[in-house]
Image (tube, rainbow, N blue to C red):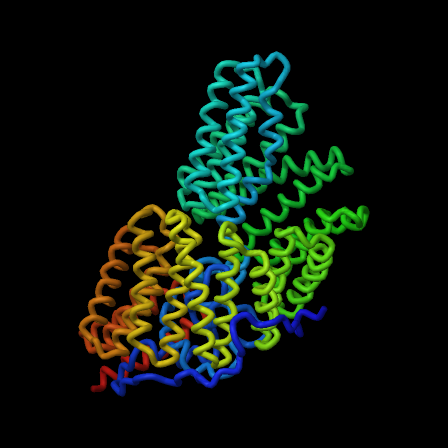
Length: 634
C-alpha cells in the first residue's frame, strides 16, 4: 500500500469546507506597529514558534521544503499564525506538550511521550522476574505466602498502569515493596528477595516519573541501583544481575533526561552501554544480550538528539539498526525481531527529520510501515501492533506535511484515526489518548487547508476525549498538557474564523490548566514555556478585541514574572527573549513606548552578541531597530 495515497474513510468530515480562513486582522499604523504583526511579516518566509499538540500536531507557518524546522527561541507570538493560511503549504510539528523551540522538531518526535516510554519500559523488566526472585531453596512456607502477596500487589499495580490509573498503581507497588523489604530484612542472604525489592523500586520510580515527580522518581531508581550493585558485586558471574545493573542505569538516565540534565543522562546511558556491550560480546548468539545492546545504543542516540548532536545520534541508531537487521534476517519468522527492526527505522527517521532530510526520513518511515503493516495483518487481535500501525501512518503524515503534501498527510492521519477508533474503548485510556491526538492532527491539517470550521469540529472532538482523560487522573502530566494544548488549538481555529471572543475563552481555559498544574507542582519547570505561549496568546487576543487595559495587565504580569525568573538566574537566554518580546508588545500598546522598545532592542542585541539568536530572531532585531529609529524621529 502506498502510504501517500491511502484513502481511509474519514471519521471527521469532508475536507471540502466553504469556510475560509480570515485573512489579516487589525493593524496599527503607528511607527511601532503591533509586535505580533512584526513576527507575522517574518513568518511568511520561515517558521516561528507556535504551540504544539502533545503527540498531535500544530500547524505553523512554512519553512522551505527539505529544511530542518529551526524555530525561534520562544517567540511565543503565534496569535496571527492561524490567519491567512488558505490552502498554502504548512508544517505540522508532532511532539510533546508545547514546542521546545531550542530543540527543533527532532526533540518533539524523540521525546514522544515521557509517560508512555517510561511505563512501557517499566513493564519490560518482566513480571516473571518478580515471581522468580523470592522462592529460593530454604524459603519457609510463611515467607512464600508473603512473597505471593507482594507479587499480587505488583501485578495489580501493572494492571492499574495499563488502565492509566497511576495513583492506584503507585499504592499497589508500594504495598508490594513494603512486603519485599520485610522479607529481605528477615532473610538478607536471599538474593531473590533483594532483587525483587529492586524491581519494585524501579516500578515506583517509573510511575512517579510519569506523574512528573522527578526527584522522587530518581530516588527510587537510585535505591534500586544500590541494591543491584551490591548483588552484582557479590555475584560477579551472575549475568542476570549485570543486566539489571544496566537497566537501572538506563532508568536513571530517563529521569535525568526529563529533568533536563542531559550530560548526566548521557553518562548513565554510557554506563549501561558498557555493561550491555560486555555481555553481548561474551555471548554474540544471545538475543537478550544483543537486544540490550541495541537498546543501549538507542538510548544514547536519543540523548545525543536532545543535545542537537545529529551525526552521532544517527551513528548510534545505525549501530542499533545493524543489530536489529541481523537478527531479523537470521530468524525471519520472529515477529519480535521484525518489530524491533521497524522501530529502528523510525528512530533513524527522527534524526533525518531533524537534519532536514525529509525525503530520506520518509523512506525510513515507509520501511517501518511495511513491516508493521504485515505484522498487524498476521496478528489482527494484537492491539499493540495496530496501535504502532496507526503511529506509522502518523509519522508518514508528519513527513508529507513537511513536503507540502497535505492531501497525502490527511489520508494517513485518517488511516491512523480509523485504526485507533477500531481499538479504543472507555477502559483503554492510552488508546483514547491516541485517538485524541489523531483528531488534533487532522484538525491542524484541515486548518492549514483553509477548512477551518471542519478543523474546529475535529479539535472539539479531541478536546472532549482529553477532558475525560484529565478527569480520570489529574496527576497525569501528559494528559493535562494535552488538554491545555487542545484548548489553545481551538482558540487558534476560532481566531482564524474571526470568533475572537470565543478564542479568548479558549486561551483562558488553556492557561488555567497550565497554571493549576504549575501551582500544584512548583518544582516542575517544564511547563513554563507553555505558560509563556498562553500569556502571549491571551494578551494578543485582548489587544485584538481592543481591551487594552486587560492586555496591558497580562503583558505587565508577564514582564514581572520574567524579571523575577531572571533575578534568580540572569543567564536564561529564553527568558531574556521573552522579556524583550513582552516589552515590545507593551510599546505597541503605547505603554511608555520609547523606553520599552529601546529595552527590547538592547536586550536582543545582547543576545546577538552572545550568539544566542536564530535566523528568525536576527530578522526580528532588524525590524525592532527600524521601529525604534522611526519612533525616535517622531
